[in-house]
Amino acid sequence: MALAELKEAAHLLGSAVKSLGWKILRAITLPIAVCVFSFLLISHSPIDPIQAYVAADSMLVGPEQRERIAEYWGLHKPPLERLVNWGSAVLQGDLGTSMIFRRPVVDVIKERFLASIALMGAAWVLSGLFGFILGVIAGMNQGSWLDRLIKWYCYTLASTPSFWLGLIMLNVFAVWLAWFPVGLGVPAGVLQEEVTFYDRLRHLVLPAITLSILGVANVALHTRQKLIEVMASDYVLFAKARGERGFLLFWRHGLRNIALPAVTLQFASFSELFGGAVLAERVFSYPGLGQAIVEAALRGDVPLLLGIVIVSALFVFTGNLIADIICRVVDPRIREGEAV
Image 1 (cartoon, one colour):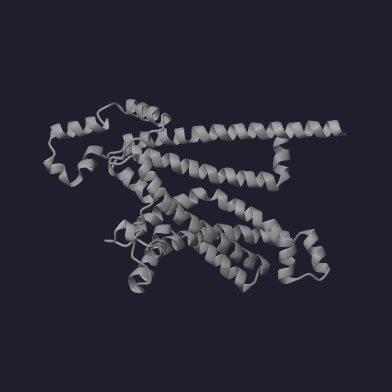
Image 2 (tube, rainbow, N blue to C red):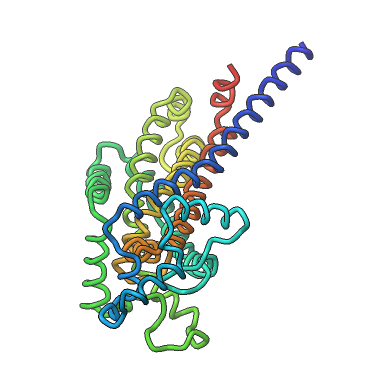
């Protein structure tokens, strides 16, 4: 018996090592594939990076100056050579210099990522919390007017474009009511060292609420359906027969079974979170990675675009990896299924 258990444990360990190896391979190949694809797209786009670089001074820049600009940024070389040179520099820890910010890409990403992570983190927590609460209320009151109201609310949110909701929030709470600033991450015309935490918080509220409202629907509908399944199980029926009702029934038998799947779903939604942040930052002129990647794409700033692509790919991969680990830890059937 002991030998059989040892064999099973060794088999599970081997399966876990194999799975980890595949994940590491994906973590390496995913950013490479995304960068190559993004580079090909921007290389074949009609955007002239030199024209975007000189912008309003285009009438003052002659052909010789354009050639020197192209030579300075390496734009005169064939696309394949530029991609190989960029990849070689990345392997040495250099992501290049941004053409539009004229600063190292690493510095730009660090600065913008801090702003974006604050926005996405606040939205992630709010959407998960309120989505879970709404899903529990709907699931515990299945078929009631409250359940139908929450479902209607979630279905409406799921089909609402984030930029449209952001414009509505901007018009109502910033323009009409003047409760919050119209946009930007800090007050305009204020020195960086004079910006307070309260100022940053006020500028963060509207984009964070917009982004979190859109993330509520998935968590709420998933939690509702999972709770309905749990409430129809045999052990819950047995608990009802013993007289357990309402919140006590949910606390003892429902919460544990629906909390972890909801958390897993939240981690798996990092891609939607990043995509929503791009639109929310654009609407509110919030200085995060989302706005930076739009500017980089529109002005042909290849080093900055590819640098943000790497960060976003690793960000989404990390979320999916955490969700996968939680699933394996919580549900042993997944580990056993792979070991067969």
